Image (tube, rainbow, N blue to C red; front, side):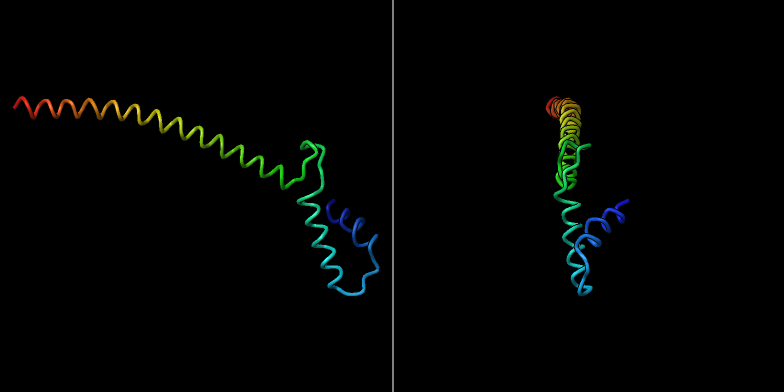
Length: 96
């Protein structure tokens, strides 16, 4: 599908080509447009690269929030246990 689209939009419409370098440069331009600037309706009329970045930003935010919650919970659990053990240890040192 993509090769057919490429041939239709670039090779056939912009040819005939004088050199292979002309074809390579046109291909690079088309691939850049295809990946970074074309707007896709299924993803909210956004370019694929922008949509991908939003996806990973969202994933990182969710991962960070989950990690922060786990870390906070772990600190509370360990902090409580640590304080309890420390208090017990200090009490045994002063009473003995």
